[in-house]
Length: 213
Image 1 (cartoon, rainbow, N blue to C red):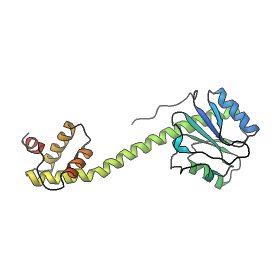
Image 2 (image 1 turned 30 degrees about the vertical axis):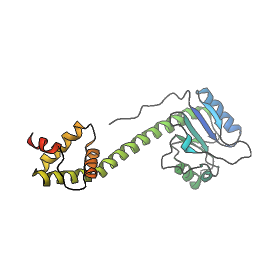
Image 3 (image 1 turned 135 degrees about the vertical axis):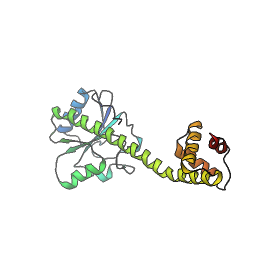
Image 4 (image 1 turned 90 degrees about the vertical axis):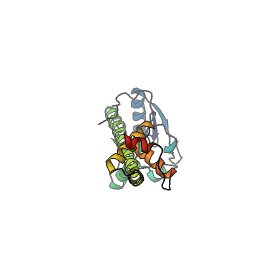
C-alpha cells in the first residue's frame, strides 16, 4: 500500500493566520518563522475573516484558524469534506459547537490557547501529515469508485462479444483485455468507448482476430 511522504521540514511554506492580533498570535507567528515558514494574516484589524480555499496551493499553504471566530463566514466558496490545504485549529473555548466548526472546516491538528512555542511543531507535523494521508485515501477511493462505475461497460462489452462472435465470457473478457492493453487504455475506459461508439450491434474489427488466438 502506497503511503504519502512524511513531511518533517516546513521551511518555505506559508502559514495563513486567521486570528485576531494578540500576544498569542505574536508568539505563534514568531515560532512559525523560526521553523522556516512565512506568515500572512488573513484577519486585518477591524475586518471580518475571509478566505477562499479554492485559490490555495496544497504544496505551499497551511491555514491556521482561531476556532473562536465565526467560522461559517471564513470561506468565499464552500469548503469540501477535506480542504485542499492542511488546517490547524486554535482552541480557546472548548465548547462542542466550536470544536464542531473546526472539524467541519477540515482541521487535522489543534493548538490549545494560550499558545506555547514548544507545541507548534507537533501541531504542524500532525496536521500536515494527517491531511496528506486523508487526501491519498480520498484519491484512492475516487479511483476505485470510477472503476466500479466502469464495470457496467465491461459487462456490456463482454455480452456484446459473446452475442456477436459466439465466445464464452472468459474468451470475450480476454479479447477485450488484450485490445485495451494494445490501445494502452484501462479496461473500463476501453469498454466504455467501445459501447458508446457502437450503440448498434456490429462486430469490432479486432474481435475476430482475438477470438482465433
